[in-house]
Length: 397
Ligand SMILES: C[S@@+](CC[C@H](N)C(=O)[O-])C[C@H]1O[C@@H](n2cnc3c(N)ncnc32)[C@H](O)[C@@H]1O
Image 1 (cartoon, protein in one colour):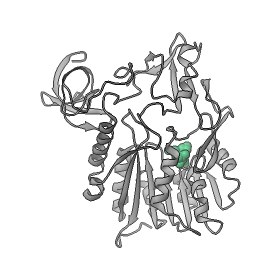
Image 2 (cartoon, rainbow, N blue to C red; image 1 turned 90 degrees about the vertical axis):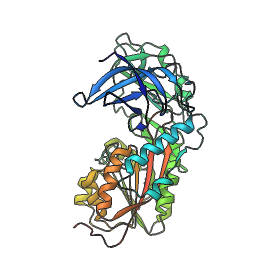
Image 3 (spheres, rainbow, N blue to C red; image 1 turned 180 degrees about the vertical axis):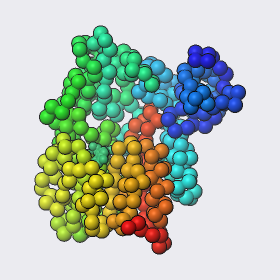
Image 4 (cartoon, rainbow, N blue to C red; image 1 turned 45 degrees about the horizontal axis):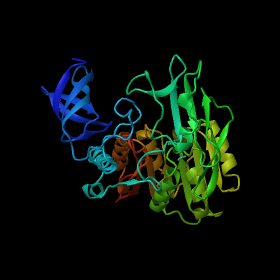
C-alpha cells in the first residue's frame, strides 16, 4: 500500500497538522491538503495496526478557496512547515476549530464559540519569525532541515520562517564537517550567532520583554517568535489581574519571565515563588531578577516542589509547562492551594484538554481562553486559559 496513489475527498483538520479522509472504511491522515478538497495522494505510511493510513497530497483536483501558493519553494517537502499552502486567515480558523474539537468535553460551548486565534503583534505575513533554528547536518556537512517524520536532511538555501538575522548568517552555504546540528539564535538585543553541536557552554544571549532585559542560555528556553513573550505577558496579566500584596506561583518559570513581569503588580508587600527544573535557566533567573527580593526562585521539579514546599494558599497560579502539560497529579497539587485564579499557558491543546478535564473534576472551570498564533505556517499554537473555582466542589486534601 505504501507508495500507492489514491483519490480522496478531504474532510476536516485533525490535531497534528493533517486533514482526515476515508478510503474503504479506513481513516487517512493527509498532509498538504485542506478541508473540502478533492485530491490525489500518495500513501506514506500506516499506523494503529493498519487501522489508519498516512498520505501526502500530490495533485489537487478541486482546490479549497483557502489554498494559496506557498511562499517557500521547499513547502510540502520540508518537515518544518505544515500549512504554507493555506492563507494565514485559514490557518488561524483551522487552529480554532482543532482547539474547539479537543476542548469540547471540558470547556463550555459558549466559551469555545468565542475562542479566537490572534496574530502576535508585529507579525504581518507569518514569515521571518523563527529566532531559534536547529539546522540538521548531513554526512557531507551540509546544513538543512529535516523531512517530515524522518531523520533525512533536506538541503535548502534558505528558510522563509527563519528570522532575517539568521538568514543573514548564511548557515546553509557553509560546510559543517563532523557536526550533527547547528543551532542559530537571533536574540532581540545583539548579533545573531550560530554554534555547531552546542552544549551548555556558558554562552548567553540577551532578550527584551515586559520592559526588562533577560539573560538566556544560548541553548536555553525563550519564546521563539519575537512578539511572543510580550504577547503572553499581556494576556496572562489580563487574565490574572495581579494586585498589591498578592502571592503568585510562577510554575515552569524558565528564566523568570512572568515573575519579573508581574513583580511590580504585587510589590514589596507581595510574594512570587518561581519554580524551574533547569539549572541554567534558574541561574539566569537569579541574574535577571536580582533587584526583586520578594521573588523567590526554586530550582526544583514542579510536582516535587508542590508536594513538599507549597504549604500555604496562593492567590494566583500561573503555569507554563512543556508540551506534555502538568498532568492530573499537577492539577491536584495546584487546586489544593485554593488560588483566586489559575492561568494555564499551553503549547499543545491535546495535553491541555486532558488537564482541563482534571481541573473540571475539582470544580475549576475555564472562563476565558485565547489563542496566539506564535508559530505561523505550522500547526502549532499557544493557548492561554483562565480558570476559576465554581460552587462548592470539593478541594482534594
Ligand atoms: C514552556 S517553557 C516556559 C518558560 C517560561 N514561562 C517562559 O515563558 O519563558 C517550560 C519550562 O518548564 C521547565 N520544566 C520542564 N519540566 C519541568 C518540571 N518538571 N519542573 C519544573 N520545570 C520544568 C523547562 O525547563 C522550561 O523552562
